[in-house]
Every structure is written in C-alpha cells, then in structure tokens.
Image (tube, rainbow, N blue to C red; front, side):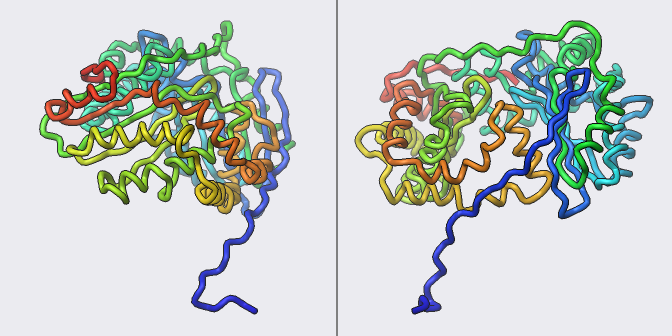
Length: 452
C-alpha cells in the first residue's frame, strides 16, 4: 500500500560516486599534468597547485607567500594589471589566486576552445610576472588597509589568537596575511627571492577538468609551461610536525562588548590518517551540523548563541580541532564549560548514540554526490588528491566507508582525537566581566592584543 500523501517521502539510499579516471603526464621541467574528462558542457576548469603556502613564509616575514601571490597577476609579460585582467576577461574568465598554509592555488574556468590562450596567460603570470616596485607599494597599501579592517573583527581576532595558541612558533601558527609590521618591512627583493624559490615547476601540479582530451591538455601545457623551471636550487618544502602547546585561556579585551567570540580546541591530526572517516562522522554528530549536540545545547536548549560549530582543520602535517561560536556576554563562562563538557562526554560518559550516528552519516553521504557535478567540482576534488597525496579512489570509497563507521569506531576516535584537558580557550570579549571566572577552568590566563 502506498504511503499516505500527508507523509514526506523516505530518503533514498546515497548515490554512489564514480570519480573519473585521472590521465597523468609529466613535463621535463617536473610539472605534473593531470587531466579529467568531463564533457556535458564545453568548458574547462584549470588549476595550478603549488606546494608552497604560508607555512613557507620566512620566520621574520609572515605573509610573504600571500604578498607574492597577490603580485604575480598585477602585471606580466608586458601587460599591466588592467591589461592582464582584460586579457582574461576576453576569454570569459578571471584568475583566482588563493594561498593556504600548505599550498598556493591559481584557478579559472573558461570555454574549452580557450584552453590554449588561457594556459598562455597562466604561463605569463607564473613565469614572467613583472614584480614591480609600484605594484608592490599599491598592493601593500591595500593589504595594510585590510589588516586594519580585520583588527576590528572579533572573529578575525579570535582566529589569529587561536592559531598562535595552538601552533605557537610553528609555521602553521600565523595567518596568511601576516602583520602590518612585516608587510611594511617586506621588500621587492624578498618577493622576488620567494618567487624564485617557491614558484617552480617541480613543486606544481596542473589540473584540467572538462571537455578536453588529455593529449590536448598535455600539448598545451608543454607549449606554454614547458619552459617553466626558474634558475637556482629548489627550496626544501618540508614542514616540521608541530608539538602540543600547553592548555590556557587567552583573553582579548573588548571593553563593553555585549558578546564574546569563542574558539575552543587543540592540535588535531593530519589529513592522511586511517581514522579519517570515523572523525568526520564524530564531528558531524558532535558539532558539525545544525542538529549536532553542541549546537542543540548552546542554541536550542540554552539560547546562548545563534550557532556553534566544530570542525577539524586537516592539513598536511597536523591541523587543529575547534569549536567556534559567538555567545551573549553573560553566558561566556557557561558556554566554555558546556563545550568542554561535551568534548569530554563524547569519549567517556555519553558516547554518540545510534540515532545521532545515523543522522550524522546521512548528512554526510546522502548529498555527497552533488560535490562532483561540474568541471570545477572535479578540479576541487583532484586538488585534495594532489595536496594530501590521496589514492585515486578516495571519493569513490567515501560513501561506503562512512556508511560502515560503527559507534565503537566513533567512540575510539573521540577518546584519541578529542582531548578537553589540552584545550585552549580564546575569548574576545569584556575581560573585566570574565577575568576572575576563568579560574574555573584551571588554566593559565593570558591577556594579549594580537598583532595585525
């Protein structure tokens, strides 16, 4: 008998993902070329992934990787910034440049017929940037203004303080933008030296997905990027493993603030670990979705916040685990206590229950296939494969591997990877109202003003 029309339809089983085969080539310069065939629409998405990011910033020049990346498309091969932007626009695209701790990414989407001229422009930006003094001065001024804006954002202040508290002096312990002091000290020689050392073909992977044959992609890559190597020895990109920092409460004073911005967490695992799928299920149940425990406790049950969310920031070496939220000022201490209690309970007195497990797995798997619908989606996924050196069947296995995660595996992951006793708590709020009460958490209390 069919179900009554008043009842919503039951969810279908998750759709399997069949990630397209990657055709690989390598140029004499060491540049790796990956091609993924996808032909429903005559477009291609192009991404150039460099194995260098803000973690390669010199210790006295945080922000140099991001500054260099910001300058390479300000003029190249005889075109100034406006002419270069116009050249990309005539191909119906624009160049996105993004710097993360582990990588620098240049990407664009254009018509398949424009693959050759698009790669020609990409080659100009990578190999023949002007890196001129007037451009440096203009970009520096823009970035200094941006840092002034970020300094007024409680969220940006909390993020900066959390990174420093969790990673300390490790290369992961600063943001990509650096500081005003180091930005003003960075010279054109610094930028050119970084470009020479880090923007190298042997450190890069070109990924193209769309309506283009692998042979065509390889031929265009050889034509426009085959001569890219830059002189001089390669620069070692190894990042040391960060050591755990002592637990503490970090207070950033915002006198009279009606809310407190909170970051509560500790050092986390790298991306390439066997427990990855158990961790994403654990996170979804604990704080990774609207119906998760922590959001329901802080938002629905107590009304402290509009939302609270946990996440693992997976990186190549080690990342972090944290809960991010903004709560009403008079609930600051209770909210920190509730988060730490939820962290502890998940691995001890109140493990993730069967219904929570089912909701978490459903939220992760039922819509997973939508992440692979376009050429841009495929490139984004392939970037993860290259960035973390993952197997080609990583995405094909995701739905079944998440589906087979057991409550026991989630409990074991909670015990091993969520450690409330090691947590740092960052509070951006009214210090006068919270300073004394922070003693409840038996951690050293540090008051500081993060450098911007």
